[in-house]
Image 1 (tube, chains in turn red, brown):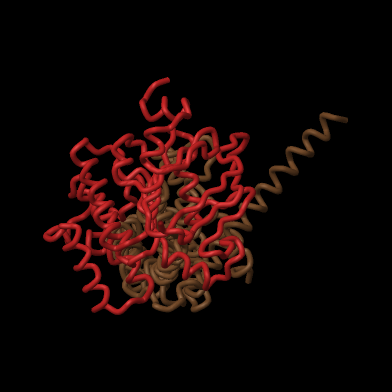
Image 2 (cartoon, one colour):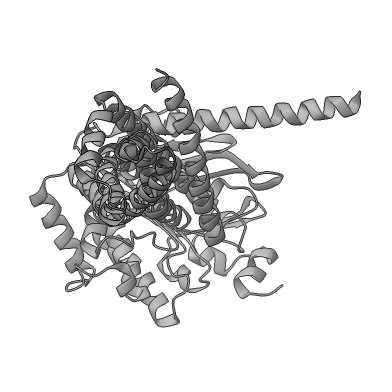
Length: 248
Length: 266
């Protein structure tokens, strides 16, 4: 039996966030385990993306603390923030690709802006383009690509810096079932290949269970379930059970 | 009494809101201006923006200048001939263009052509999460979006103003001398004798100030598209663009008056 304590790169402690009079997150505490895929499920508009944006620092909590490798993000110095941002990346729901840049430029942007050498940029970007099977599309613009290819470009950009943590915000929204499975497989395969920690926000139930190590369910601003894929399938919690079975 | 307090409260809120807004825009401007010098310098981006703001505006600026000069030539000629002073047409056209119309109309044409496009482009970047994506990639969005544009404006506005001045004076010559028969030697002699270095510098100072005002307003409006009240998405981008164009034009005229009253008071 393996009793080693799991490494926790990200920890949220009693996070609360409101927009006007709407309380979106209510004293949420959670831990993200290193090297695993954690999926956050829940109804639309429950604050899953808001939660993800707190982890990367795009939103600041009204109350509570976020720890990255044991350090409070809110109290990090500029250089610590830069280091933190180098280790974490985010794949947006709508991909957020730069429409005026080619596929190559989109993937190279984080490296170029962080003053990497040209040879290193070319080699890293070409490697990612090969891995994501995007060869031949380097000089195309995002608008010239299919939805699935755009997702791959977004994933290539998210992985080009070799981050330790990747946050996926509904990566399969708007895709047909075949492409949905393809993107899920892609995330799972690359996670195994690069060993990054993944946090995935998704509505795709039960498909997302197949690739997840840990499932969390967010409801009414709180985490109402945390467990493995088996745990959620066998849960006695009627509310969670109804949700995953798609019943009212 | 309560009614008066209500009015005062409303007035106070408006003043605080306006001062807050001006403070935010000033910080945005200062940060963007100096972030340009952070290594690595964004020289290719600067060149791209000079091309977009400057070079691509040359044609529209030339056309505006030509017809403005020609209209000034016609109006000036018919007015001056009543007093038998049509020989001063060169003075009237040159001073009006170099001191006032050159910098003001150039700035307004750049707002219409490049400023509106800039706000719309940045606004779309905001609503499609491209600006958020920059932050997640450890890239300063203000530097990425605004710094090269403000310096490109500082380079382009005075150059385009100089082109406007030149073409405008030629326009005055076309209508005054070529069409209406005023002696061309007299026209250009008056142009040369009436314009001083002080007038030219005044025009360039205006162009420089207008560049700061226009580029800052247009970029700021696009950058904070998502913070507008009651509008969002593509409608929000449209609203930001309109608001950037209107505000830029109004502030061009306000600053024009202020600079004229301080600079050309002799």
